[in-house]
Length: 420
Image 1: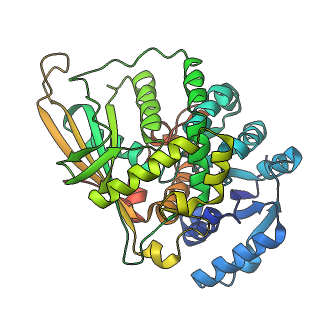
Image 2: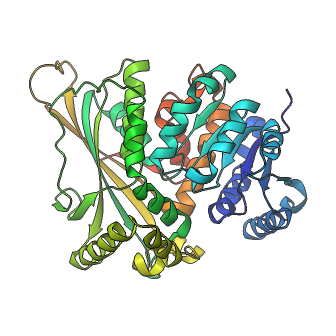
């Protein structure tokens, strides 16, 4: 079946969608045979025209105004989604929170033979799609690859990269995320805040979902990785640190299960932490955390949190999102500290005897690194089909891209992987 577009960006007129459009336009020469055919999709033709207009201005590419096609599609109208999916090799889905709007798009992709990439950081959605669509996606030869943004490509590919660079058998990794912003500060758009609110409110549902997989526990090789406290001073990054609240641990664990079962590799244990800085930030975080925990349990509390993101997050989240100036001055760094057994050592005997330190660093997380990661994931599918998993299915980034050159592609685009 002929598909006129390599990529269709669905939800292009959303806050993140705008930046994904710009990143696709920037990298169009990296498509198959140096040519990428793409379109934008969403509910409002007028809004989509504005997005393309803005991208043309920002990039100095007036030709986008006439070259980029517009598809009108709505999550609430399955026929419009089916029509969109029939025209695309890959749908880049930017419409969140995914727990409300994601499934109809996945369903349409699976049924109409389009691959699906999202930038979701909601484990309940990601794992739910794996449970419900993996079989059908495999039958139809479709890749459904979740969490292809800052959540969770740097962490997931970072653990695999650390493993691949380690000479021997890597058994455990801890990652420490630090984010820095320039003089104007930084913030995150309130779509992510909403996803967090509903995620915490539904925590119990995730547990029952996980039980349905009937997974056997993964074997532990080497010393068992100890969980650290809720707040501790990290010698690794020299600042106060908390467990990382995002989807990375869930995604990495699913990847490690996949490589253990499909590639017969040793699964790597993983712990994820984030630096929060000094004492002032600890006090802010504790206040915000207590208010959040209290309010998120009640319907009225959730409404308050949703209405006033800036107030309840001490300015960390905002309805307007960060300015381009704030984005330009922001960056992130993941430091991976791994241990394992050097070559020639038996991983079943004695304690791990070797260490490794790797780093993944890049530009602002949400709206610079996320579009880069998402678009490079899509270009990897288009250009390296023989290195992708043999059958379709619902995959994590690590499971889908373990044997591809995605890490090299990211290195060339400013998300840098290195060993220290």
